[in-house]
Image 1 (cartoon, rainbow, N blue to C red):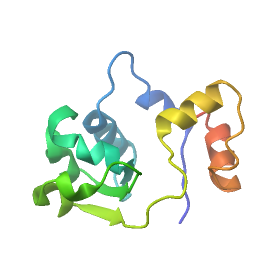
Image 2 (cartoon, helix red, strand yellow):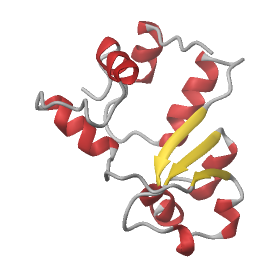
Image 3 (cartoon, rainbow, N blue to C red):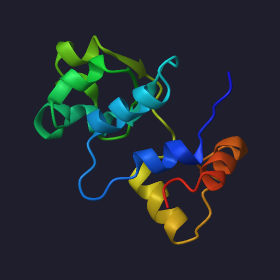
Image 4 (cartoon, rainbow, N blue to C red):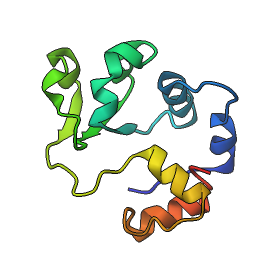
Length: 131
């Protein structure tokens, strides 16, 4: 499997104001129509999905969602309607980690090596993600 993320794609995904997951997925599907898309989230996002996500759980039909259990956010409060549509990694991560935390650390030039494998960190830096 190879991952291609062009400058064109990056520019197409940039938006001002509020950015909704469903809009990003639609854009990615247009940019990569032959690829299968996966959206990785923590259990905190899935727990809040019905109340806070624009369009609620309908976004789960747009691509495959992978959920990592985060400490303090068990899935026992999540409806079966949602759980049937996601792939759950049941192993709880040893370290609590969020994209918000990574974004903050990268923006402030703090090391994230303890959280990301070298290949992922290289990809994030190469494409200026989270910055």
